[in-house]
Length: 502
Image (cartoon, rainbow, N blue to C red; front, side, top):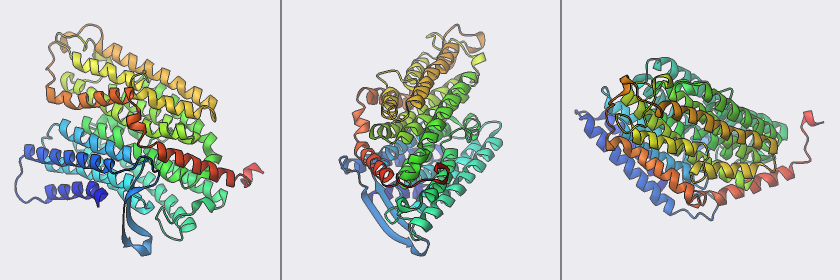
């Protein structure tokens, strides 16, 4: 039951906090939750140590019968697709709890919601049953809605409602796709081991995949389903933005590989050129919109849309190298985006604004925020794909693996890396260089505990950039096997033509 610990411990602690009859000091609550999340991070490391990285199959499997009449069983497993993301979830939750200022109201509810999100995300990445994945996919919806609606900014109600509507629609479409797969390819069972979707008629596969792509495209999010993301980030608190960009968006990209490519490979090959074009649109649109923004948080939010496009490009190519790059890019983006949002939050906390028209000179050692500026420069270098940072090697893997199949799309996405440098150079130049204005002179100092999460994330960004094999080794066997299986299925179904190909 090693994997179940990652789900049920945060659920039990969250329930205990909510139902505790006596009074608890806010600092006690934070300390207890911090110890819990740190323990879960260590438990994740212990589970990772028991995984054979040379095996592409699911490991540490747990299976219990549940609602057999509905085709729902409690099935968990860990492989190269899920392990890096489970570890990222555990790490970011520790940093978010550590960096979160104690809310002035309802601290027990606040930390309980963070634990519910951790449990839901871990369960989704570990689920080996479509319906079980859906349940965990929906579990994080209400906690994140409440975190934005209660502790967000001035327009928090609008942003939270918009997020709720979009994500609810995503869940509905996902459920439709899953029911189609289970009824047509699994005899009513939602278990991944029982599904035989690859032998469905190609037209049926394409229809199911289109529904799945729309559902997960909302979650990622990809253009044109992206409009909820900038509003959610701007109104959410810094810790919530770190979780949202760092790990929650990865539920969508993970779903593309686990359920789209793996279960419907023939249809995936048919739609792959369109997916590559979709990736280009998201990369270029996200980058161009980021250039136009004045709010630092909006810039980072739109950058996430662009960087998720790289993952889609790697998934569309479906080569061993591009798929490995896609998984590594999810982790890379999770680390870099969490670092960027944390630093933007520090700037806002000390200056009271995120508007680039009101900021300048923050890098100055006298009265400014020099260490924040230094870490920000490192973070934007990583996001721009500068060699020596983890962002470079992950994007290189995607581009190198995708170029043979989609050369024009790959070149267009490479232009996106140049645009990333443009909007982040604009951010750094306007906010951190120049002279401090009178309003910004003698800013409050940043305490060491505020720097802690940024230090951990920056260290990982550099270390994994210098030694990327420490990251890629966990997924290489699984992504290679997934690519070969998809290619084989595509060859076997090559004789089947769609109506529009006749």
